[in-house]
Image: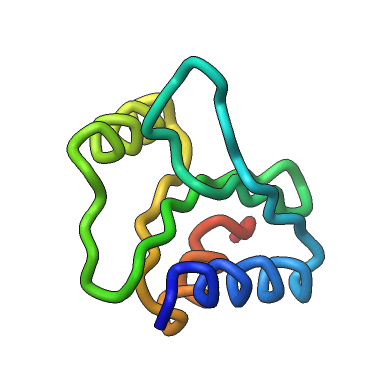
Length: 93
């Protein structure tokens, strides 16, 4: 499965739950996650999308750790089976 296919499934699943899943770019800052997930009630998560089995590059891992240290939810997604769990983690309890 291609990264693009997984990304499209993430965008569709977030939309079904009432959120938006925007492509995230940060000019001047390399290694940021591919997508920012904005859910109702101000819930935010960041998702780095990979092909199945692919691992984030070292700079991507550093960016994810930095986001988590700041208190944000940040994930690596490499299978459509993970999408539901990621959305559940971002959603309010």
